[in-house]
Image 1 (cartoon, rainbow, N blue to C red):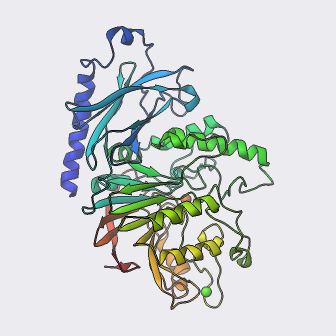
Image 2 (cartoon, rainbow, N blue to C red):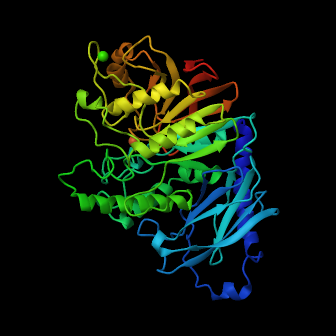
Image 3 (cartoon, helix red, strand yellow):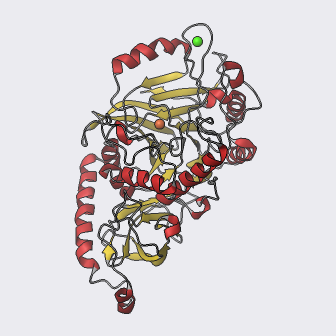
Length: 516
Ligand code: FE
Ligand code: CA
């Protein structure tokens, strides 16, 4: 879709929302008696907007959270509130398809997650919520293609790492113009860091979040970014978390700083962090946390064109190695036995042309040691090398594996090698590390090149390494994937234009990626 058409669509959506606001009072969603019985809720009850996610061929999750005072615990009364929802084939809701009422409960922060089923595959729908006479903004979403469809194209935006304090979420303005079928967000949706007076914007609160209310306030603040809110309302998202949604570099139930956070305190923190994550994300009820655990690894199929395996590389991993030898310890696991078996089953049984893997952390090797010898990051797959290398062996027998990653706050686009220790070893796949929406702020590109250019000869599998903020956009078709690295001029202003920094291509049946 061209920018001009998208801008027309955006104007149309905006105009549609205004018309809907006026029309809503005339439309009776509830019997008059029931409406009269409602205690009026404060204005701004839909301040956090709307979202949708995890598209199926016949279903989609619709989300909102009632929060008239979003940065102070939400501001809702301590009671269950009915919320009506409606989904239609058109933005003016003249062709309604499904509607119902869902209960917003205080135990879940008055969030609602409607798992709508019985929809038609591969089509756009509009949705909205209503409670206490107030109407939400209108959201637009899209179901996955029919399971039997093998052709067509899929447009996916890969995003990660949006630190509020490092900048504005300007890349989403461009992303919305590109009209992706869905957004894949691979972690660091919020950062748990303390408010910093020197930030481009300042975190709410007075310190790191530990309690449920503190995490809710942090998510709510992030959702007040207008570009983020608009992107959620424009397309479905498929999300997973990394570490900063709870605590930097945590592993399973081990915090970054075990000396400062005793085990029981960290378990309470995980419980709060995961619940706030569920409350704010458009995911199915299967992700309602049970104490300090949340089920996030899952599979989504997009016809016979693409299968997406969303990994959880935090909850089941061994603690990070502390040295080169530890990183090669075969007893270390990233996925845990159960998730590993699940992933291999999905890969080997896949009917799909493309087998996408959403991994929070980078899979290809990063050798930081210039010249002789190697030095790795131990939080990434390099720190869990035996398991990574075994996975590379499996990739040799998988149809077109492509790994989509975040964490690094850099664009790093690589061939995946059967054995990174052997420069002549076979290429078995491709990986895109999708830079960051804002984390790291505007980079000092000279300093970046001074640090990273000398490492290029040690990492011949890297095809592009770059320090601009932004995101990656993929057009997936049977014959290949065309990728764009799209970067904003700056994230230090609320509005900034974006441009294409690089274009790349993955050819079906030819493992690896190349610049075009
Ligand atoms: Fe990050
Ligand atoms: Ca080296």
